[in-house]
Image: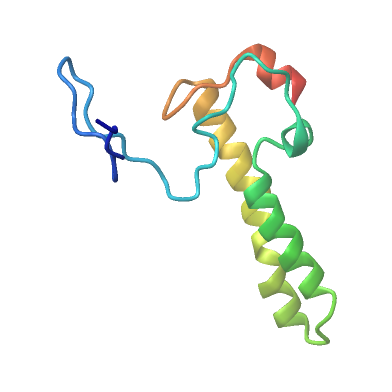
Length: 106
């Protein structure tokens, strides 16, 4: 008999397995933790924040009004402050982890 295709998430398993809830924009689930740092992570640990920040900064240079420039440049401030805040929390073990080796490489 042919094996049936399983559609949808796997049911909870015994021993505390269960459902794994993740952010829909988290593309790092299958990330190899033993591989060297590559891609955008060599430059920033928060490429998503910085992509929006640089997009806003680029848009800010295109508008003539100073209040609009300030408003459009705010995502870059969020990337700067938010990334540093997240790293400081991870260094203290709050909400994640940031090893010294990974911190030195990135």
